[in-house]
Image 1 (cartoon, rainbow, N blue to C red):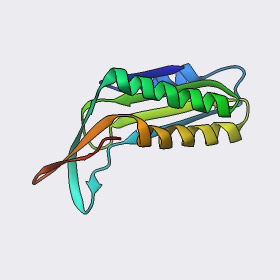
Image 2 (cartoon, one colour; image 1 turned 30 degrees about the vertical axis):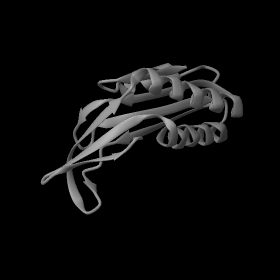
Image 3 (spheres, rainbow, N blue to C red; image 1 turned 60 degrees about the vertical axis):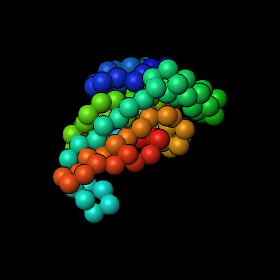
Image 4 (cartoon, rainbow, N blue to C red; image 1 turned 90 degrees about the vertical axis):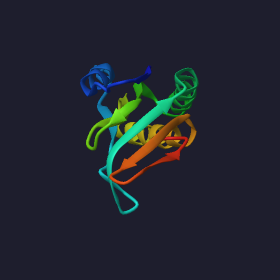
Length: 136
């Protein structure tokens, strides 16, 4: 499993890791910074994490997915720091022999990551900023 918290996400690294001759499907979800939220223009997001706790929880979620679906490989990567609109901030992905397991596991990974991994997000608008939640 490839699980980490980084300053910059390398999408090629995630895809290269997930490729496998046993896999008939590779599914990647890439979460990016949206330039709007709640009717306001977002100019930047800042992500903070307690890395050790975040990685431990990401590993827990990954272990759950690996127990539920027959996966070849699994990747979960989250970015921290300041990010501009359009930049990737989270990548989850799996490879599996068949697409059904790949789609289902990938959705489970991003949904559980957003619900349970302690990563904080602050949105910056043109006129102010606000902490959003304890998760991406």
